[in-house]
Length: 196
Image (cartoon, rainbow, N blue to C red; front, top):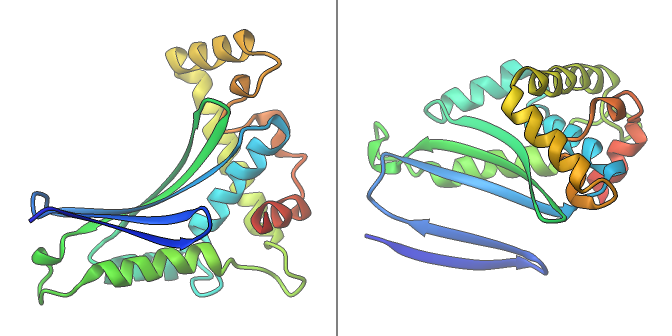
């Protein structure tokens, strides 16, 4: 049975549900569209990593992994792409279809709740900022990820070519940000990006 459901959550935010019995897994994704700007791309990418890995409810990776295991091993992925002059941040949860759960549970609601918790209840310190140790860890991981692009010669050549061709335009900015910008990011930058 295939059907589609569109729900307007608030101005500019829609929930699109597509239901089908054709697959053994379901996917829940959130896409955040924001203007692609050199000074903001790396901040947004780092923010996405923080939101994907830490929350007030799941303060440690172990707690988040336990919750994913309870949800039949839900898989979380995050990433950034660009479409024209827009940076698109995404977080996706891949989980088994309800018809394949042991007791026929409806996982959709629990998975949605988990994702909403990650996005709306960040792990902040007593001053309302992301924790320094979490920021430093994710900075290090992001730097390693961006350095890895250099080892993928095709991907690196494409990124470099686009940055040269569109040097003074938003499209020339990498959707994943740049290594040079990582260390400049402050917890104030991240808090502002989250609130925006």
